[in-house]
Image (tube, rainbow, N blue to C red; front, side, top):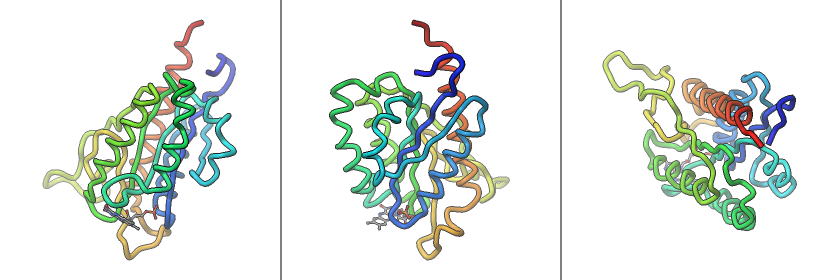
Length: 198
Ligand SMILES: Cc1cc2nc3c(=O)[nH]c(=O)nc-3n(C[C@H](O)[C@H](O)[C@H](O)COP(=O)(O)O)c2cc1C
């Protein structure tokens, strides 16, 4: 945990097969770093083997994966399974956690992925932070530009048209929603770190 004069660390661990969820992950990390006194680090699951110590040092870890076949992608699940030794040692207990996912369809069963990420965090004894935005784009005055246009509560959702590359998908509204989640987690982590007494 950070000392009073140290910056709070928010780590983002993600998988992305084709680059779309990577864009969402970058936005989450950018949002986290926008909070003063907070440093964010981005790790793909492919590079996580060199990052265990840094993850242990982090006040918060935000998990992100594309939704494949109605759940986290296989590489992300491999990462989850690789954390069993971390879980047994209680190394992430009482850290802050949150999650995000991106997929091709508006729904695409993304909620199942967010629920799985929340269960994963709970198995580690982490404290789950939700999205904290009202559902948008659900009335005649809503639009595709709204924050949380896909209407999730548990975490951040994004939707990438399957015929577009990561240069244009997911759209800006979903990236702004991701930035919101990163900043929200950073503020909670900062508050949590400052209130920890020994
Ligand atoms: C194996 C596979 C399974 C997929 N399953 C779903 C799904 O269940 N729901 C959905 O909406 N999109 C699904 N998609 C589409 C991806 O979620 C979508 O293309 C996403 O943007 C990919 O993110 P990435 O570029 O980060 O890998 C699937 C794609 C693949 C390759």
